[in-house]
Structure formats: structure tokens, C-alpha cells
Amino acid sequence: MELVLVFLSLISSAWAAGIVLLDQGDTTEEDRFASELTLSVDGVQVRPGPEGFSQAPLSVQLDAVRPILAEADMAAVAWLDTTDAVVLRVSVAFVEADRAIVRLLDMERGAGAEAHLALATRELISSAYQDDQPMTVPDPPPDPPVVAEPVVEPPAWWATVSGGVVWPPASHSGGVRGNISLALSRLQDGQGAGILLGVQRGVEQTRMGVGPRYQWDPFQVGVRADWTKTTWTRQVQPRIWAGVAVPLGPLHGSAQVEFSPIRDEVKLGETIIYDTGWVELSINLSGSRKIGQR
Image (cartoon, rainbow, N blue to C red; front, side, top):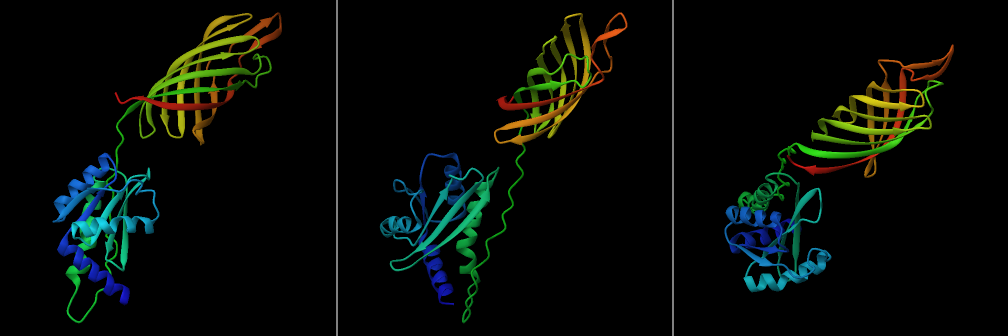
């Protein structure tokens, strides 16, 4: 109960005298939050934060803001923490000479996050003050629910480089081949289409292929036309393939199955010396990078 009375006393002082907003750097998030807070709360003063303020312990931060509040003749100070890659976090401190209470508000990054945080800051200051009744002391208000608006990522061009091995189970298919490929795809939220160019090299054959691909994370499908050079033939062979990819740290590992709708054989008399078979399996390691929004 004593803590509640202290909290309400500090809030009442802050509401009457305004609030100091510490500007800790030249970031877009801080500029937007300052603009929104100025529209939501009367008496906002924006001041530069002390050097190294965001990395300092809370006790050091409170010691640093006391002279700022004394100079501004205010009892409350707020600052926005933008160091987290996932959420934006606002600290609101109600400070007097011998006591201080700090409340935290956070929200996932996204469109409108700064405006929601400014309104939540105003609600934090005003709700307990407005709900106070004679002879009763209301409990501190719960943190207001904040719902981040969904962020829709625009389509972008991605380049994916893959390397791995291809294993054809057929006994006369030329054995394991090394594989390297480049895919250019236009994706939105991991879904979209593109084109795949690949080269395969084995002991008895070389393949160069190109064809469309479609990706719907974590699944990938496509068709490809392979120009194939072996000891005995040179020809174009069609392929249909499907695979699934899983994240491995910054890279992706994938397993694929390739189907040959046309099976090629080479015979020497009655002896089969080359046979593509119907199915091939491959394992690859890949890395992707965004190369443009258009």
C-alpha cells in the first residue's frame, strides 16, 4: 500500500509538471516517438541524453537524470531503447530526491509502433491519476494491451547459391556428381517464383541445366532442361524435381528428389554401358541474399 501511495504521488507530480524525453541518438524511431509523445502529452521537453546512458545500469541512469529533472523542474523522465532488434522499449521514471519508480513498456517493431508506445506512455501517466477517488487508493493500472499492426514485407529479388552432391541410384548412371547452382527468385514472405541455373560434374558426364522454380517455404519444386555430355552421348534431358529446405544457422540445407520422365540408355551390343535411371537424389547447402526490391 505504501508503494502505491508513493507511485500515485509521483505520477501526480509528473502529470502537473510535464515530462522530460531523453534523445539518445539520431534514429528514426526516436524522432517518431518524440513527435507522437508531444502530440499525446502536454509539457514534453526533449533533451539530449548523457553519453553512454543507454548502456549504463539503472541506478547510474537514475543518478544521471536527477540533475536534468531538477533543472527542468519536472518529476518524470522517459527514454526509448532501440538497441533490441525485435522490440522497442520505453522506460518511464518518476523521480524525486529520495525515491524513484520505473515502469517499462515494450512493443514489437512494426508500422505504428512508436505511436502505440506514445499512447501507452500517456495512459501510464494518466490512468492512475484519473482513477484516484477520495478515501480510496486504486491499484496501479495494468500495462495497456498493445497490438502491433502486421508488417507486410514487399516482394523482393533474392539470389541463392547452392552446392552439393547428386546421387543416381541406377548402376550405370555414372556415379555421384558434384552440383553447383544459382537461383534468382522474386519472393514475398518466402513464397514466389524464379529461375534456376545449375552445373553438375561427374567422372563420366557433365550437365548444364536451366528452368523455372517455385518456392513456398520450406518446399521447392521446379522443372529443368539439362544439356548432358557423356563419353557416349550429347543430348538434352528433361528433369522434374522437388525438395525441402531447413535452416542451418545463416545457411540452409536441402534434400531433393529428381525424376527423369525420359529414361536414356546406351548399349554396347546387349550390354548396358549408360543408364540415367528414373530417379536421382541430391543434398545441398545454400545461402541467400536479398539483391533488390524491384
